Length: 203
Image (cartoon, rainbow, N blue to C red):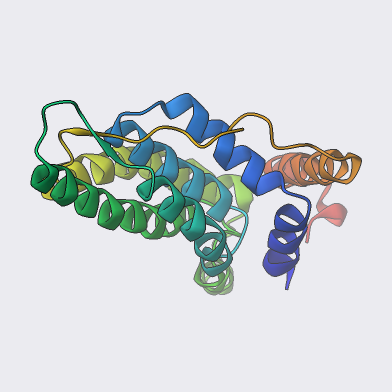
């Protein structure tokens, strides 16, 4: 319920979309960079929101990027169409893989993580948010770029560009969006600093 509530709040107030559009604006027009931005956005959001909610929110943005593919001058229509199909498939896979990678990076990223932590606690091994992140985050940072390289290798996209959507940086941020962001950041800080809390405060 907590993960779903975080996802609904971030999505309702446009925080997730603003974050994704900002990364999309930074990525520019190169297909590999756009795929990296989509995967990174999905991984970051999925670290704190359920994988399913992240994927549902990201897929329309990935498909919108795929719809903006255009060929380089001098590239044949057939080659452009083939590269565009490859990019559309790679964009969907980037969202799916990014959600999975991010979901494994933090203790709250996916329900099985909490199940594993509870089982380990029953075996006498305490595992809090920071302990999990010390392993999960480095693994995610290693796997994410390798996944992008694999997608680019298996689904070549040479000869096309993907212009960023209009207003990539200008999604309005309401007062509620800023409050939601502040609460979310405060929650992440509290989770990360849990080992420093007095024992009576820990869950």
